[in-house]
Length: 253
Image (cartoon, rainbow, N blue to C red; front, side, top):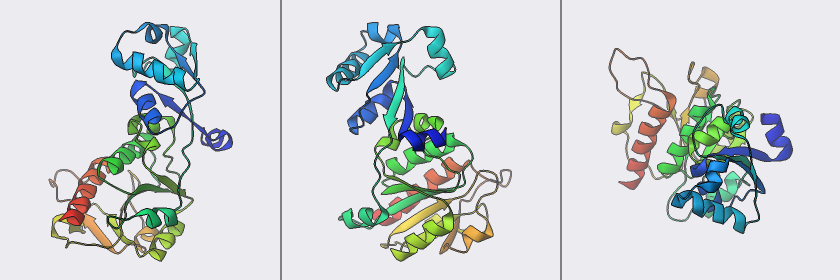
């Protein structure tokens, strides 16, 4: 649960790929549950991961398949799961202080309901050169489903959280960040935007309701993606991917 994650400062990680990427990010576990088949595997990735885990004194506890299956709910991501320390996150001020080659860019999730969408957006932000993923409200980047869907990007990309969007927006404004907001219609297409060298953030609202008037009053520019009239919106991560690609392209052009 979110309360337990905050109390113990741990989050779950599941599957070979997530363990690999967390290890590369320096997030090392103390213990992990594994299937006997994982321990007996001769696959190069499994053997290498076992070696890495032993090198950091991680205790590998073999669990019966029926127990493991209940914990993973039948998912087949590799026979390993466990807890990981929540990554230590920099402040927004530190991110700006460390930006040397170009002005920072951010992807923001506001009140997202599906942790899978949150995890997918973390991966999108990581892939498209965002300086950090910022979240506000109920959005939970370290929910187990979010960690799985991010494929380990939660351990590589800074992730900062605020209780509400107003507080986040105020802090971004203090750093002169230009806020773009995704709206389903009526916004400016990104391909019509001019090159912008200032710090920028793309704001994505909830899956069902998008951004409300209280959030939109903070933004500088509303942007939309032209689409078929038979469809009223894209999934939130699909939209975030397109918009972040365009934002990154503008900043590199």
